[in-house]
Amino acid sequence: MLLSTRGRADREAAAEPPFIRSLIVGGCIGYVSGITGVGGGIFLAPLVLALGWIGTRQAAGASAAFNLLNSATALAGVWATMPALPSELPVWLLSVGLGGFIGSWLGARHLPPKAMRLVLATLLLAAGVRMLTAANHYF
Image 1 (spheres, rainbow, N blue to C red):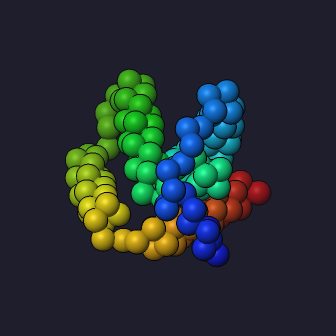
Image 2 (spheres, one colour):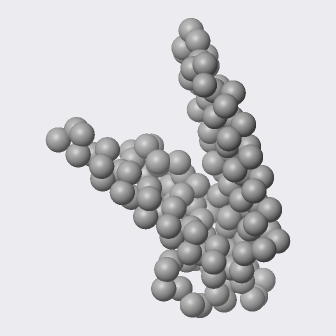
């Protein structure tokens, strides 16, 4: 992602992804996400970019929507099984909403695709480091 200079998907209209291949890719993302405990959106964006299915801005939007729906579903599941949610939850939700608004505004209007790929690569690196440090706690 960091060394990507191709940017082909950002200049050309990407072809519609094949249906069966999309289902397989989605299933793999869900499987890896479930095993690692990392949201599937972090895997979705680089994969659809590498496959040339969508451009950088569309990948960022798809990943954000995926993470929003995934997180809302997870929160609903936790709410159904826990007697009380953390008292900090309203502050967290406000922070997430504000961060999402600022990020989407920057991504849609101000950041060039190469800068967005750099941000995505940084997020992937942070997720990888988080996974490795969390794994060290278990061993």
